[in-house]
Image (cartoon, rainbow, N blue to C red):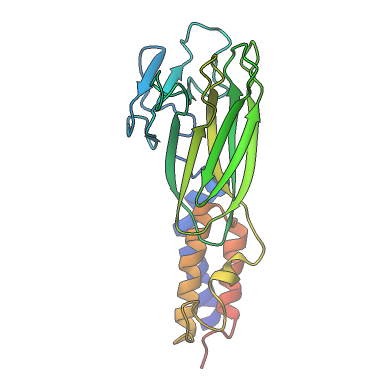
Length: 260
């Protein structure tokens, strides 16, 4: 009877704490990924170096252009929402221009776990021979993307997987093509980072043998409490589902982990 009551209490605690987050299984870890907030009244807003006016984002040392759907060219329309980024520099002269704008954000991640970064990219609609070139920095790794410039803006979704190295991961987008002959700038929108679920996630973080920091569990209750807290965190990050969290708590309560 005591075991049944314990299981009921623990699973009830978990569900009470996490049920509202069950919708977050595909939660975007990027804040303001479509650049909608706070918005502005004109059709172009120049972001100066270091600007944080776009919620969640920081403009790089060469700035960037924030574009609205009110832009006169009818092909300049965002794939998501009413705004997007033109990663051209706000400077017209070398060494800080003409292109090379950037924007970045630091997100919270779990070390050792896999995430999927997705975004919409386009090349500015100018008739120049050079393609639009984008450098994406994720933590300590860099990735390159290229698209041809076309008469009309054509958005293409780009995706990459990365493994988090720490609990804070830098996501940076930089236009790396400085073109004095004409515009071949990178356009950016709909940025998202979501966790990719993996097998035995909880077991990896809360081993039965003892805490990952070393030693052994002082008691069975300590082990179960640690697992419950970890399950809450993983569910909030979208790394496990409601069913997986409940099953893990029940299995932990029934296990011999931490028992003397």
